[in-house]
Length: 282
Image (cartoon, rainbow, N blue to C red; front, side, top):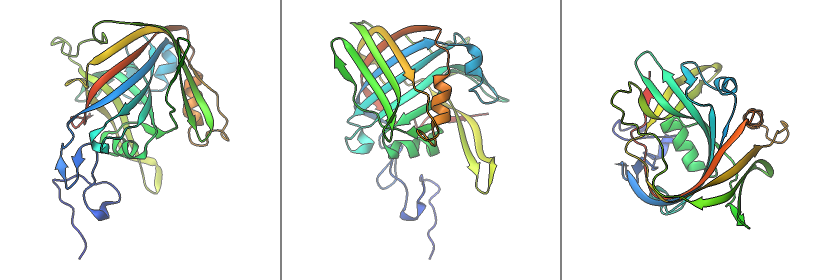
């Protein structure tokens, strides 16, 4: 007898073996089994000012750049993640400030244009369940020597990103991000995404295409250590032969004009959450 899906549980392909275990559902279908954990993370961030029109060209309909056109490039290395039974993975994200004006919702926050990760499991769950624009790459551990920390990213041997942080000085307090609780602000706050899945057979049409929000509150975790300084980041132009499926992404980032660097940070954090409050914007 063919199986039937339980509408109260979460499934992902392949569905034939039962509900999928992942960050928002534990083994045996435990919903929000990993709502919060004590993962340890180290993030390395460089920011730069670019031209607004270049960022506008990277946004879907309904989105626009808001505030200063500052691009934030962050590489994060995590360990001790509960839903991976204590294992970890690394990410490389590129964001810039944007707002979404829909027919029902309005939201403002960093727009996550792309998020590279070095493990399949968070890529699949993050794309299908949350709507993150996740893809794969290799993310070696940063190397620190003589006061200089270097981060790199590569795909099957082709290094497409170099980031360097220097003159880092320990800072006090939080990360200084703006509060998301302004009662006079009509916009929802959080990280903005655009979820898209093509229609099988009609490749130019969408099965799914809509904006998504990762709410700011509750916060993921406060920094346990923070350093500020200077930094640079370079995305290297790629041929199709170098990055067959990603050259257009890397080249678009490489084409962004860097008019001014806006500092660098290193942050250590403890804690994380499952992002089960992710929701669609209309």
